[in-house]
Length: 313
Image (cartoon, rainbow, N blue to C red; front, side, top):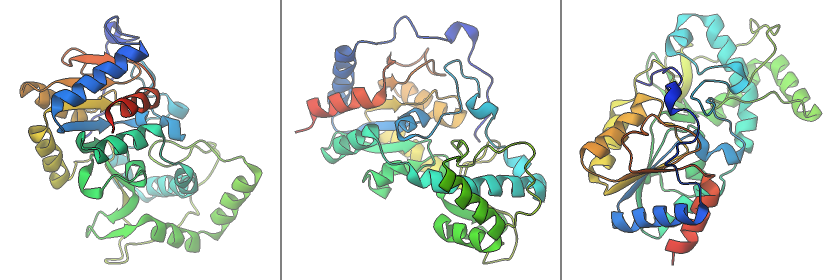
């Protein structure tokens, strides 16, 4: 299950003296990894791959959770009581239109181009924003390790529903909140969105009036986005597919991830146990700094656009 680790150890904070920060060297290193993998490069992306799309990361370079002074949602909190679920869904309801505005950036498109050209065999993403799909990556080539905001699921009967449909049901049951949403959009005063798709609201806001649509199959109100919260188990099928991709690849490239959660780190650890080369393209320290082959600390869009131009026909 995704853990909630402490900040990285003091000695691993800040740019690593061995990190690559020269663009030309960085491009050559990634291109070499692609050539070495013989069309079987597995890419794993994290929040840093989507920051150029306007979706924030929770972590500071030191590994602390700093985005809007919050930390991710815990599964047990969501289960605990109705008031917490009202709080999440009200904030998620307001944040959904902003998430829809996010579009794939150069990182997403460059990776897709290299996949189309036969250089990348598969992609694992820790992100829940669906942007790899929007960039054209085939569904069967992507494993969404931590789920997706684009579906909701019932914790009682496991019925799933499209988030667009559920958002309309939220609209129908919360006319006052719908008006509030329209007002903040019209005035340009939209609150900041978190990576989980919810927004930050003033502590004085009451969520008591927010209505949660029940599951259309069983009628229970234990409906949540199909996102893996901290403390929640990753679906067995997802875990197995990700592990299989690691087993079958020839090399791994990590893009925009500190690998802070064990669910992601263990995949890199397994690749190294199998003797496979692993490179990291990430700003700041990662949990895997002592086991990877090399690390580039440059903007992923800049690096991957240049790599794409070099390796694609």
